[in-house]
Length: 240
Image (cartoon, rainbow, N blue to C red; front, top):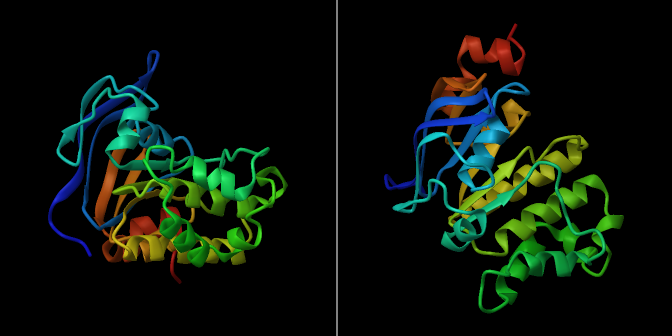
């Protein structure tokens, strides 16, 4: 359920790699209960933006406020305890641990392991339940992606950040992952999503931003972007 309260507010964010400016003064906000997607070509700065929000990269200037806390420059492990969880591009599961052990690693910030959350993850991602005793390193790419998402929501986040969850996956698995993300959002978790599959992301999201070489060039509701000729040409394949 979306309300008007802003959970994440990014203002005039600049991020550089040495002398190279990667993010050039962007403004993004996410309301509590929303699904917001950031679209853009490779090298646009999408992953850099997510890594800066979650504290893995330091910004040069600008501010990031999360749940009324100014988290600009705050270390990643402290941001996690405030209720933000980041499922990075490339999955990064612990290959020598079982599926269930990986999921439990996601709950390390909680005092008690939450059996209810674990069972809920198994409900929305049933393949993980089937494989719960299996070593994560033996899973397929799609199963590892499901595990990375499941691990990210074990900490019961207020905000779930997903970086390219469908990258390199077969269409049937992409469908399963987007269905799970929809269920996560419907449970009340706010979602910020970076995704190459623009059409699937816009169908899932409430609003979207388009990032091009470090600048926001378009923003609006998903419906507005789906109907925009420029966005259709650049990201969706032009309608005939």
